[in-house]
Length: 175
Image (cartoon, rainbow, N blue to C red; front, side, top):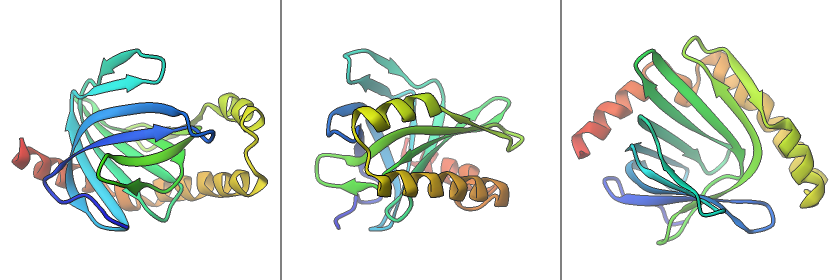
């Protein structure tokens, strides 16, 4: 698998299970790029929705994508602490166009005190039926929710207290 080079700018594209484009984040700076992990940083970037709407992110963020795990994280740096938005989705792939993954609707929002909320279970149930998610995908996603919660509770990977701060310092060097 090819991977983006450190210091390069990449577009991030999420798709739905049926192959339709879901969302595009216009520009993220690659802080670390390997075949297994991509860590990126961005600040107030343009996000385009499949329905044509667009908006800008409100704060700096550090993104973590993994080629082996069925989730990715966005650590958003706000004045009252770091919030995480975690997408349950396929491991990432990368081509010269963008970093890509399939978004499977379920999300976990993590607050600065590391409490969390599972979101969009109703959307997941609806899309699971509409797009006919295979049982194997459902099983992987249910396992991945548990794995992600375990990472949150253990402060593992992107949830390590120093992770976002360290990578944000590196992001500032590229701005």
